[in-house]
Amino acid sequence: MMPRLLTAVAALLLSTASAWAARDTITIGMVLEPPNLDPTAGAAAAIDEVVYANVFQGLTRFGPDGSIRPDLAKSWDVSEDGTRYTFHLQEGVTFQDGSRFDAKDVKFSLDRARADDSVNAQKQLFAGIEQVTVIDPLTVEVTLKAPDGALPFKLAWGDAVMVAPESAADNATHPIGTGPFMFKDWAKGDHVTLSAYEGYWGQPPKLREATFRFISDPTAAFSALMAGDVDAFPNYPAPETAAQFKADPRFKLIIGSTEGETILAMNERNPPLNDTRVRAAIAHALNRADIINGAMFGYGTPIGTHFAPHNPAYVDLTALSNYDPAESKALLKEAGVSDLTLRMALPPPSYARRSGEIIQAELAAVGIQTKITNMEWADWLERVFKGHDFDLTVVSHTEPMDIGIYARPDYYFGYNSPKFDAVMQELEGTSDPDKRTELLQQAQRILAEDYANAFLFQLPKIGVANAKIEGLWKNAPTQANDLTQVYWDE
Image 1: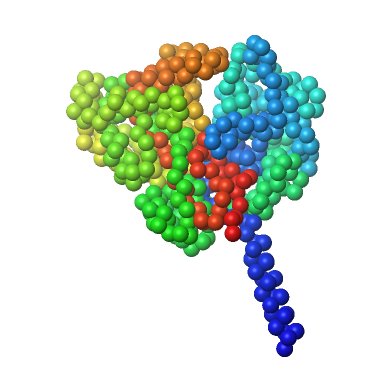
Image 2: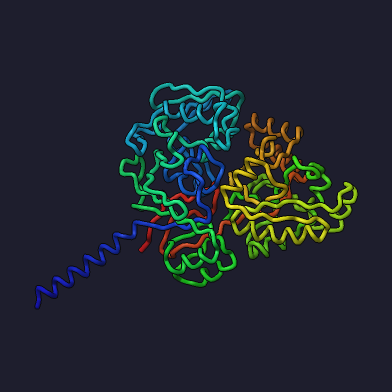
């Protein structure tokens, strides 16, 4: 009997050890499925949410506190005139296909991003680069057209990650980077799975495998967490049920901030939206408190311009577009506008759909009718973002400190202001922190006074996770689910 008992005990111990060892995998919930997996060839935030810091890396990167940190560049020097950055690269770095990463790949990546035929969604990040020169395999020099103290910040974006000439063309469907996780599989409509890269040059991740499951329906997201089908939802889409997780010891509720300025964007190419008075009328018709309470269940910070309130340079300009239906009606009358009907295109996130319904009712109260079209993400990107086929849309801009998009006349909402452009051009060549703050505040005020869009609220980061998971970001200084420091604490 004794040998059988020992065998049973041994089997139990082995089973327990196996269960323990199995906690090196994680399933992450995401609302949106990325249209592709190449951050250098797409504007969707969902791309970076899967691959940023996990599969792909840049010369620099965002830390969880928003700081700019070394990544593939272990250090850099700046010339006295501020026009030359010399980057010193990490040693022993390989891409996940085993090929070596060196200065030639840096030159290829940056030249590709700024090329005339570049499809990079943030091509303007690289517009100030004059030349990229390989000094030796571990040293590369970037020469700028003018001094730019923000270059390390720009190179931390997902759009600036390093890619290899041998694999860049296939990164949309089979991404190959230098990060700690490598692509394993993509079941369209369901999930993407990454696995740890054994040849990673830095500190190995504690997770062996990570699966990103796509769950757009808020009710389904709640059910998936409760059932344990997903371990964490870093950007939880159902704020109305967040309190239930806070009261449940099996979970942790992680409330932070994002870079997501949530706006009612107006297509200024379409009359009468090219009239500042009409845009002002729309802005004054909207009650931010109603939208935040109704769409976000109280989570979210009102904004009056395109800038994050947690940024030290932020100016509270909400009073310029305060809720005033009488002012809205007066402005519409002054502009000679009546019987106005506008098309409102809404992407899938619940904040957009819920906000859109509230906005529709509030605009109707001042005499503006709206026809809502609910779109899938790929359709929104194609028809609204690229095709400019819309009047109104609700979307969160989650890129870090992206006020510069208003200096792009080809951008989807069509804002065009020489005064704003001049401020941004001066900012580009300014490295003094106090002067940069002054210029950023000027830019914020111009947008608010022009009613460039209707600025609603700063998107909160509402995360829900198994209580035993550690290392998830609380805040979102960029659009990422960085798993490099994530582990199970059991």
